[in-house]
Image 1: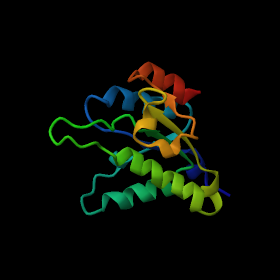
Image 2: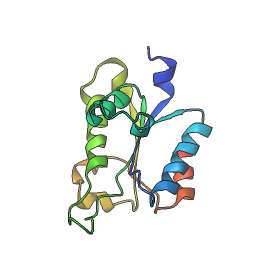
Image 3: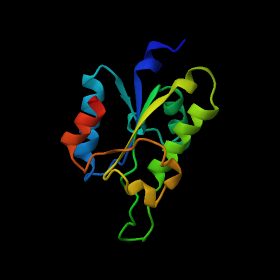
Length: 146
């Protein structure tokens, strides 16, 4: 049986830059107000820890995940996409698929700006029910709440 902490924990996988901050705050607010515990890599600021290890621990200790894959466009400086969020989504889905016990019942919400945009860069998840937030904090609140 899952511990109460595990059963109420929500791993939030999203960008942490200033432009995304209103959506991040809306997500954390909604998770909290609904009685769950938001979890993300920002809760531990320890340079001695390997970032992927922190991500693995957070995924392992969370029954739920919210994954925003909206930041995959090319950046202006390097002309390369950011694939951290799709990678972490893959870790979460892998934990559900190949994990044992409580990990088999993990549930997640996948967000993107537009509902079908993800099919251009990560078509293998086309069977998932992706929700669009349109870069709107209000839409994120509604989607996460629902």
